[in-house]
Length: 206
Image 1 (cartoon, rainbow, N blue to C red):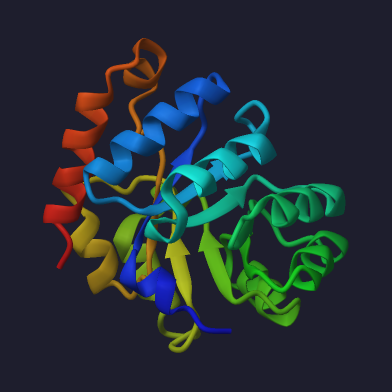
Image 2: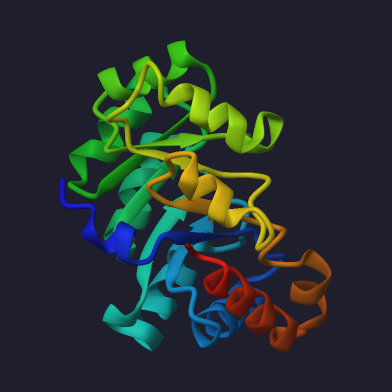
């Protein structure tokens, strides 16, 4: 699987918006700030419709995915809507199989060495190390011992102050949620704050 789009846009914004309208506003703000890899989670209302609208607005300028996928039906729905990558918080065989069947880049969640081995065995193109905040960059660096070639994307605990450490520890990309997308800013429509935060993340890339 070609992961060029991910390595070229290595900050994945994990978007959990209170409304579909807020999701669209947040994406516009992220793109203005230079963050163009967008993961619309299933905790956002109407995720498939949001994905369709983002694709219509931004086209090839964004690398668009869907997250918090926990059922085969969800995987099929968002793939049909235009998601280019699919993310699950765990590694469940039937869900992984459905994600892979779409032909999209498949990211499966794992935390422990055993879970990483399971995700790889199920065919994950990328292993989402979650919640990465529990161990920080030092934990990711330790995982590089037994898994030197694994494509690891830590998610959780990533901010502008430590993003360079995550990449130094061996991340192929990072997932950033509330540190990038302030819930109060999304709730109030403070898109300038989100744009400025996005710029700070991009500026901190190694």
